[in-house]
Length: 151
Image 1 (cartoon, rainbow, N blue to C red):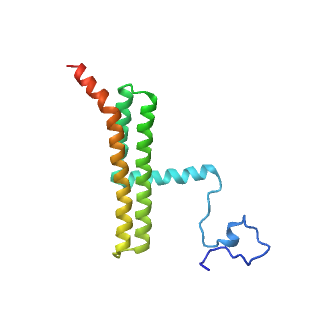
Image 2 (spheres, rainbow, N blue to C red):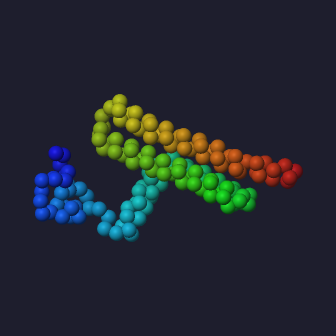
Image 3 (cartoon, rainbow, N blue to C red):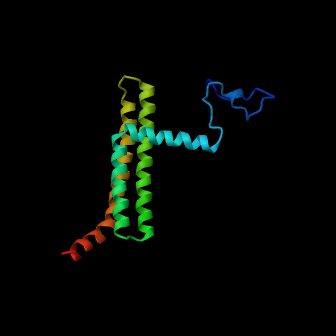
């Protein structure tokens, strides 16, 4: 049995007590506020350390600004916002996967580590390309119409 796994043979111990069967685990968030604090810490970390996350935030901000400035319907702005959110979520997952892989392999090269990192980065790329397609199809027509009308 792996360390920290619950021992089904232990009788009389409450399953609600984390320490009784997970002595090596870190403390779980005690309330919702603590959970949000941990989540924001992850977002702050990604923004501070990940160049691509900052790029996605900047491009997403421009896309939302254009959508609002062009007076797009609320549902179109929402679709653009959701796609931006998905790209940022993929970037956060990519950062988490890269961190776990780095923790596991330390400073050594491993082909499976490379595959994990490349696939995570590929997921971000697919999401980013899809978001460009979505935002472009919603923003470009009114933007081009505005350019034609202003001439």
